[in-house]
Length: 580
Image (cartoon, helix red, strand yellow):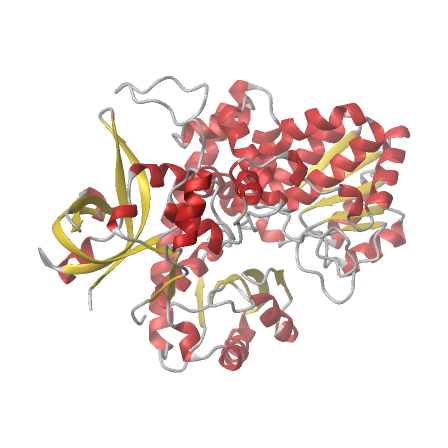
């Protein structure tokens, strides 16, 4: 990969310092908020303390009235309802939320999640099985928007189908009783960024508003933790009402008394309100960050669906038995460790596969394939290939005559469009612009690779593939202090469309650097008579590029460091380069 191009979106100006004085915040924080479109006192207050007024009316979602009316009839007539979800965090949390809500309303409800070997989404077989088992109504959670054939089969055999989904719509919608999706072209909802669990949450919110209005508030408080979990894990935009759902939901996760989540949190060694104080006397953090979900809970819940059955994770979220939850969480923890090993092994093979044919000058996309790669890790391998080669990537695991894989993107390249353009070579495929899943006959892999490379060649230029690292703000030494780090921490939860703010500092002197255990490093820089501590994760191989007293530019995140009772400012380095 070529050296990354740095770009600072803004710098502190006079207006920022004036606004900072009015709002009693750091000038750097004011500049970042301005660059993100938040320039008034009201907008800043709403951002830092999101309020329920950000929640949109669920009744403006398409087909919501049909869905609610049918669910009410099922409740009244004690019909059997099947909730059909997906095998990732979003699908698992969606299913858990709907099942728990309907059970609380007295419904006869069961659930089914597809095993990864069955492929993503609702199948015709699942519809036929539901009919054979006596179900009158199927409710999908986080899937179904492309289930054209499945919806047709449901009509033929007399099953009502309600689709609750947030994935991209194709040109044709399924002929279901109701298709609730904010991404529908005819949607009047006004926000398309909900997670699958977010959509399910809105449907249940509308159902309760019609059936038990007084229960709506307690429902929102009880289930916003699951919505936050899905919203952060599924990388949907953390803006608009998602900002409220994720912000409040993270606090609920910190305070949760769900037996399943508590067992998962304990295994991930995350802070929690019920946790005992640490032996060194350190205080527990009062809030979580988006990273706690992204790197703590989400990989564990996903590990169940990747390597065994997603039903393990769903049972964990549905159970109220402490012993059962502890046993399920232990199984999931073991699966997560196995997942790490299999990912590393497949990534090594994938890199070797790519290197044999990869042309860095002409190839705008990477396709790697290998035999025996577990379906549950191909998405992770694709992500790692993007990181390594700096271009969109597909990882395809071959099983006898078939291949199943995942794609991940960069440079604003639309994978959903690529899937549509190559659909004649696929047996199935779907997803988002940023991530997709697909399957095809193994003999078609060369043809798919050729078509994908041609498609990417038309859409991406060499300049598009130069890695770009965006800093939110160029800063001076005088603007860096602990107050700034504390205020930026209040921008959590961070993630898609609300990234953790990063800053760039030019011409600092590298006064100390030394390796740490685990391949990390730490040191000090000095600028304008002030010295700052820094830490740089997974960086030891780069230390040889720099020397003591060298002038460097630093791209970093200012963070709060608590150690031995002291709270100090620490710069977490993202990249370093010699000053020009």
